[in-house]
Image (cartoon, rainbow, N blue to C red; front, side, top):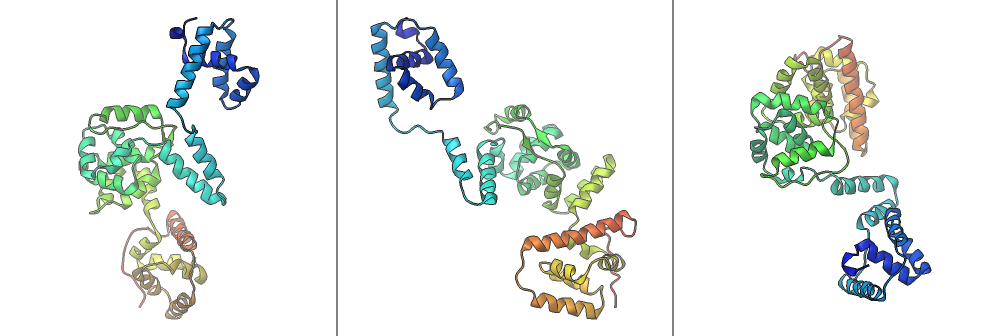
Length: 334
């Protein structure tokens, strides 16, 4: 046994044998099971420790102790345990999700700091599937900006591919990062991350400018009309009701009680309110106006839930063939 041939594990094994069973057991309490297995296997192969090896191992230990003086901690575990101990399950869960997304999923983070036009320039020669994967990892607004700078002939293809993405493995992300490494120094990700999907597409298209969303959906409709229609439905919001003709809007309003409508209008635009009021009796409109004036502060989430329930009524009527969403006609009551 020579000191120059001893590995780090061998030196630890020698040190702990020299310290004795009681001290070694206490140290094992602080180590992982894998570390204990490696050290005990090294111990099992030792039947004699020459005095010079013992002294050199202890000397190495003293030098290392001086060199690495301070506090050793498992920062990742410490942070997770601290967040878990924060009172309030919802806040603790939210903070944990934010922490994990920042420490375990760092893939393609550099792109989020780059100008959209520059990113588009890097991606325009890539396969549409690669572009779709990259955009799916970005914030919605940034992805929309990048998409708007891509060649028009690939926009709809990229959006369609994003809608089909659910999860991507680290291997795939690593391949993408390797391909772009010269232009942007990227760090590989961790566990599988949920990206893409219809919600991502809806968010991106809703942030498109110059009516590019309509052009993209029209092009997508040529390849997959059902997907295009599903995306259109998800893009339809309460405020979109303002574009309906009077007959269609009146049909929807007949399915909604005044209390629900009042709540939905609490955060609606003035244009939306006037559109609604112009398609109901003046008496009913005045009652809702009075109720809105008398209504105190309400949670925005409650308003959004009520608005969504009315949108669902509109979609149900469309499925029954009673109206077509997104068409305007200007048939207000007089």
